[in-house]
Image (cartoon, rainbow, N blue to C red; front, side, top):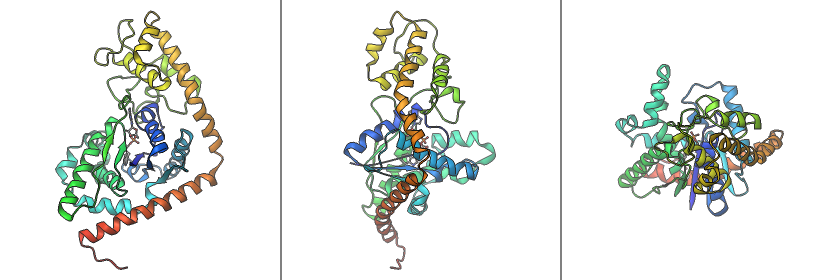
Length: 328
Ligand code: TYM
């Protein structure tokens, strides 16, 4: 299957990103045709410091390599290095209605949070995302729950284009993980874990052991003492059990049994050690890659080259179908 997925360069990569998306990326690349993209153009919809953004893109690439994205198996590249993303986004925007963009939950949230900067890019964000995906004839998109609506609009746009101009795009499937599609905040387990929230609310993949211990020990739990998985009534403990289970492979039922009589503190202590242990190889790899700037540049150069040649095939077709006069 042709797989495409993306991640924003800004903010720290956290266990929500990992368990909801990146862990699947690493699994898919063993068997499928994968492309992974650092979406720097999407990041511009929030005001960025140019130097900080440049640095964040390079750091995100290192983070992805550190957790197992393998450039020998997947195409890893930066969105702005392949100009066809913006070209296709423009074309698709002419097939997208204002109303459907205004209904997007993430747009509404971001517009509310960024009252001083309600730029048009915030609204057209999903069109650029549809372009990212459709450009490569993608069949499957591994993402967390929060991206589900953006995948729906991507399919709608593809359908509309195909109906109007003839079959050009594949309608991609959304690939949620079996569990972990929505990892919750440690401080407010009613909300998703988010990198734009307070760092105490998430475990970053490259957090130092002391920070991990501190954050897990102070994670918000529920009233009572019972260790039971019940996302409705006990969202805090259920979230910790889910993270524990996904990080070390034990089933939730097994964990409930193991900690039944031991209480919240014992569960938290044990979870912190599991996280420290499983994330340690990522931290080690990250430190090693931080000094290999030329190697990273070469990966991105190769990635952009491979992605561009695939993108060009689709764009030639799209330009022709939409009636643009070619000049080859
Ligand atoms: P981004 O950068 O916010 O997140 C990257 C991936 O992590 C998932 N994720 C989560 N999964 C579970 N629990 C959470 N708490 C959690 N938080 C984040 C996201 O669902 C995502 O899969 N718009 C996208 C980036 C993008 C993209 C694309 C993705 C741009 N173009 C094309 C797929 C295909 C975004 O902002 O992801």
